[in-house]
Length: 359
Image 1 (cartoon, rainbow, N blue to C red):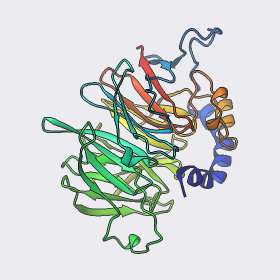
Image 2 (spheres, helix red, strand yellow):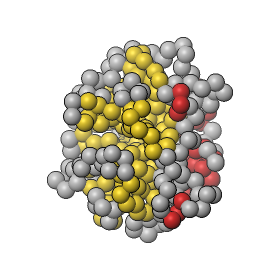
Image 3 (cartoon, one colour):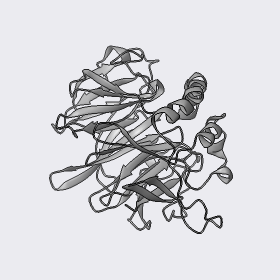
Image 4 (tube, rainbow, N blue to C red):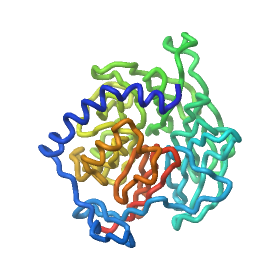
C-alpha cells in the first residue's frame, strides 16, 4: 500500500475527531496568527506569517526547477553547511527520475541525482562527520536506508532488518520513513509505514536494539514518521512524530518512554535550531515550539482552510485552489543557518516554500 492509500485509510476516523476538537483546542490554548499583508489584493507582496520575533515572508513554489525534473510529492528537505538545500521528492513518472534535487540559497539549480530512489523518495538528513558531510536517506518503496556523499555516492545501504521477531513474517512490510542521529555517532530508523518499530544502529550501520510497535499506550506508536535528537534541556532524548496517534512522543536514547507533547495535530517531521523546534504538520500548518515545548505560533494556520484541506484530501491535487500564506500538507521543514525555514509538502505536483525570517 503506498503512502496515499495508507494515509487515507488511517485518517477516516482521526480526521473526524480532529475537525470536532481542533476549533475548541485552538480557541482555548492558542490563536490563529494573522497573515500580515493579506490586504495586498493584487498579490504582489508575499504574505507574512507569524508574529513578534517569529515573522516570515512566505515564498511559495521556491526554487528554479530544471526541465529534467518534474516534481512529485516533495517529501524531505535538509540544508548542508554551505547553505545548499536538498529536496527529496517522489515522482510518479514511469521513467526513473532523480529523486534528490539541490539548490543554492538563491534557489538556483545546482545538481540532481538518485534515480535509484525513484518512487520511494522520503526522508533526507545531512550529518557532518569529521570534515565531511553525508546524506542519510530513507526509501519507503524499496525498503532501504542509505548513507551517501553530498553528490550521491553510496557509502552503505541497509535493507530489511533480519533479526527482530516482527520481521520473520514475510508479510510484514518494512518501509522506513525517517532517521534521527544519536550522540554516539549511530542513528535511529523509524519503520513508519511498516511495523511501527524504531531501530538503533551503530555508526557503522550495525543493528543494536529496537523498540515500539503498533499501539496507543506509552512506548507504542502508530506511524513513527519523523524523529529528531532533542538536546535543548541538556539531556539528549529522541522526539518522535507519533503521527497517527496525533502526538509527539519522547524517548531516552535507549528507547524508554519519557512523555508526550499533545499540542500537535498530525505531526510529520521535526527540526531544531537553538531553543526552537519546528514541526511540520500534515494538517495544513507548521508549528514552532519553545524550549519547554510550548507553542510559539502556528504558521499558516486557519481552521476553515484546514477543514477544506481535510475534506476528502482533494485539495492536494488542486493547486489552483491553494491560497498564499496557507499550507496544504507540510511533510518536512528545516532551518537554514540564517533562521529561514524551508517547507516541503505532500501534494501531487510538489511544492517547496521558503519562509524568509523577518524578525
